[in-house]
Image (tube, rainbow, N blue to C red; front, side, top):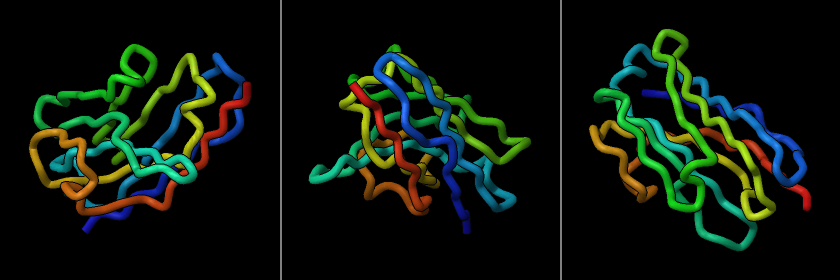
Length: 124
């Protein structure tokens, strides 16, 4: 069982940066693949970035590649996403999710545990 809590969301201007954190409970955190998803109003939840527990392999959606960086600190049971050069289209509720899969999957059905989400708003 893993419980996830996101933090770090807020309001930022276009071109600004935010760092989201996902804190997890559970002794087996280091064996979960963790990903970030986001959901804008009226849209489907979409994959943003993920980090595998095997070799910390990372994977990004094309829309954030080069702007977002995902990382994890197993000693702190945490995963982070550094978001730079933010755009209004990045506005959404951001969720972290945990999966027992080794690979980073982009489909939300592959994930077993979800946080409650944190709001990111990018003003133009």
